[in-house]
Amino acid sequence: DVTSSRNAGKQHTVGLIHEFHSEYRKFKNKQGDFQSKNIWIMASDPRVLAHEWHESYSVPYTNVFGKLACRVTSKILGIGSAERDWKIVKRIKKGHRSNTGTEKVKKQTTIAG
Image (cartoon, rainbow, N blue to C red; front, side, top):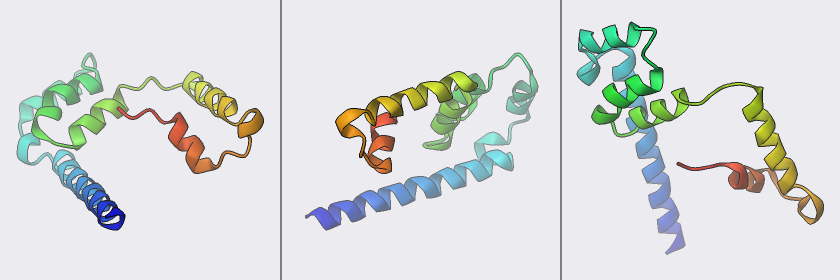
């Protein structure tokens, strides 16, 4: 039934959030798989890109944190990406779709990986 399916989805999401926080705490406190001094020597090397470090030292040892860290640290920041996002929103809200709500626009402009 639809209600039990929604509850299962929410429980899954809550589980992922809990797992992320647990893994992040270990990363931040350099515990568990993050306690090796060697990986932090690599992290301090300015030639090592953050997403490549996470790919090597976070992804293999975590279920949520490593993948998210890779994705977040690999993004190029700058005004260009913000302008592209607004261009997509404007395209969606044009003409007969001008009344499209915020949540629907968010879903249509988000790329899930």
